[in-house]
Image (cartoon, rainbow, N blue to C red; front, top):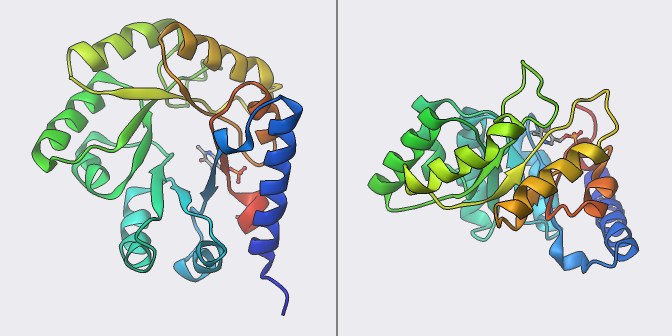
Length: 222
Ligand SMILES: *Cc1c(COP(=O)(O)O)cnc(C)c1O
């Protein structure tokens, strides 16, 4: 019996991650693959879980809430990461649901998350999103404001931020954006870099990505 296409794709993406890591003299285990399952139903996610993938990305709180509690009952070690924008009024649900939030990008959200983390006694790992292309329609702090925002997260809100995330403008070569994110992370003593998607995860790994977010190359077109 042959694997479902998503499972074949998963193996191919894992192999490509391994090659990109070796090409950069990096340990493949230093790169975490986040399988982005947004818009795909639980039945499409299940075979990928059964094939051993354990880290998934979702963009919407409501969608994740509808799909993941049942899947996590069957796969208790599965992790779900929020990679889409988060409204402050969904902070409570997000703190309850997600293992990592990649899109912290403003003081009001930092305040809301800090409050809900205190109440819940549970803290998702946190990344600050940086708008490396300074695109008005995109989330993320401006690169020039990143250091001050990171300091505020720590000092004003008591949050532990582990790293940074970016989504380069679709029309740009991505590597300079990945390089900029890496530079901001280093000067702030941060070790986690969420960058790279289906089209450019190999370039991101070359530039130091620790987490790549791959959707369509695994699950197919949306
Ligand atoms: C949808 C999405 C991805 C995955 O994109 P693909 O091109 O399908 O790999 C990665 N990151 C973010 C923030 C996304 O919204």
